[in-house]
Amino acid sequence: MAEQLARLPDGTEICHETFGDPGDPAMLLVMGLGCPMGWWSVEFCELLVQRGFFVIRFDNRDTGRSTRFRGERVSRRQLVRAFLRRPVAVPYSMSALADDAFGLLDDLDLERAHVAGISMGGMIAQTMAIARPARIASMTSIMSTTGARRVGWQHPKLFPSLLAPAGNARESYVRRSLRSATLMRSPGFDLDTDYVIARAEETFDRGWSSSGVVRQMLAVLTQPDRTRDLQHLTMPVCVIHGLNDPMVHRSGGQATAAGIPGAQLVTIPGMGHDMPRALYVTIIDAITRTARRASVSH
Image (cartoon, rainbow, N blue to C red; front, top):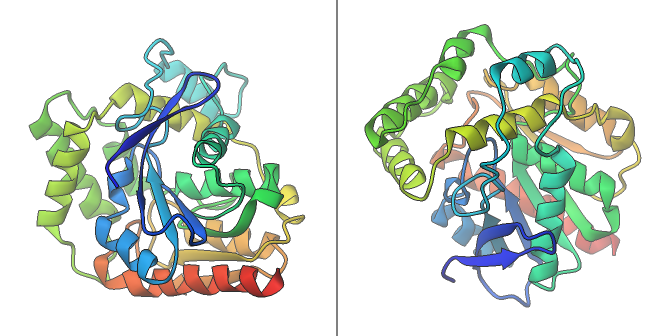
């Protein structure tokens, strides 16, 4: 289905696309920091459709063609204060990003869905499961963490790249995307540079916003530690994490799985902070197994 806009009650518009039969169980895919829905590739979505799911991918607020919060500027000082755990005003929180996802489900008349999230998307998925567990049939948290600072840290080699300006031109954005992909790549698998470049070009052309990335980053830095709340989850949960992830250390995934009763932890040697095409089937197998556990329990 072509891209559509869901207008939420607060006026926020969420751009989304669906795949498959609406009569099948819904699978909501939530992407990470600064990444539009296209980072869930069409191939990945169609493979999930073949497993019997109605798949929804979408742009988080401040990403792609969803609403931009341009009037909410974030300064470097705010980021530093947030990093140091000092009080800071935020344009929006992780809970607001979760509410957007629930609003999209409402717009699609979906009371309940399976949810899979990558990185920040995993944080959003966890927040959704905690806030309204009855609406989450199963959850898969991929290369993410609990919000606790003692786990899921970044490798210091990433800091220069993360702090470097991306520029406002298409070419500079593509160059930076390729540098970031090289740093975060899965060392056990080939990096498809042509795919990375094409994805970066599409991301920029659909409406990339550096200020939007910073606003999302502030939501990540100010998120709460969900460790205690995760203990109360009862839906089937799978946690997937690469053993070579430089962006979110594997301790983040391990802590997430340890904090949720009955959660399955899938660790993948050679996987970094990306999702190589060679791992699609492995990841989809894990997502499907988790969803099937929900079917059995209900």
